[in-house]
Image 1 (tube, rainbow, N blue to C red):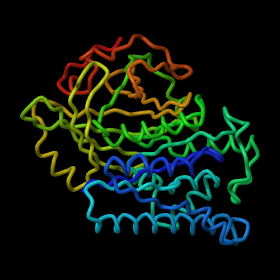
Image 2: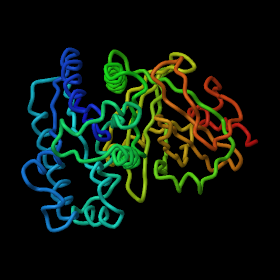
Image 3: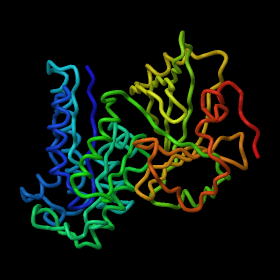
Image 4: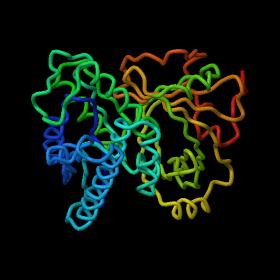
Length: 367
């Protein structure tokens, strides 16, 4: 069985309700059994349980996160019993959305009370798709009338939108769908992004890669829309032209694990199939590591800016340069690079800067 769990999130009046209908229609036609985990906050507030009716905001948030996780677990266990090859579990908001409604101390109290941590919650989802509020770029469409739990002004909606993006920044697959087009095109872009993630029809990944001057790490760490993760990447023995690797992705002492297979189609396009691993499976697969390659260790800064998701990789061997990558929807897509980033040159088609080459001790010299 192929069971994927994704989050549809976004600022107030972003189009989530209509988007869920589009997802149902689009992926049912493509052979997926689509399950929806309803938005927990709307359920509770509509039933009279709210931050302003409970003893404290933390009391409410503990209950909401606990209910959210319980519902997701029930849906996943139910999916395991279903006679279907492909099941898509769609969460109308995920556990980390709650963080946007608390200060840091309250959030830590909630995590402690539930005996969990932020990284485990965030990365329990396979992908996150953020729909930008209509208050940013489509203000004429912003309304409070279609959701009794919505109370934000235009200014507050924009502020909350930024907070929600910040909450999910650091996830390995976050995509931001803005209001650069009309609403129908916005939803079409959402469906296209989900299709690409699911590998429908093929699991293509299109990216551009740049060699950049060593960035100001203190500045990156200070940005609310930037998160730092540590990565250890090990290539496994492969009998053909596939590149098979396992990856440990950690933050604040907590880690998740993946196995990936990649086959390059062109300089910018490649087919990638990725699977989440348990720690035990990861450690077992390390026994099949390619003896001709060494593990790659790097620090990755995930930056959500300009409605794009950038990845800046810092290698310990380099003191003057780094690598920036951005994943695109098509090879001709126009985009801007983050503020403060100084490009040395594009290295999208340069084999020397591919991780596979770096693992085989073909590291280009630091500038």
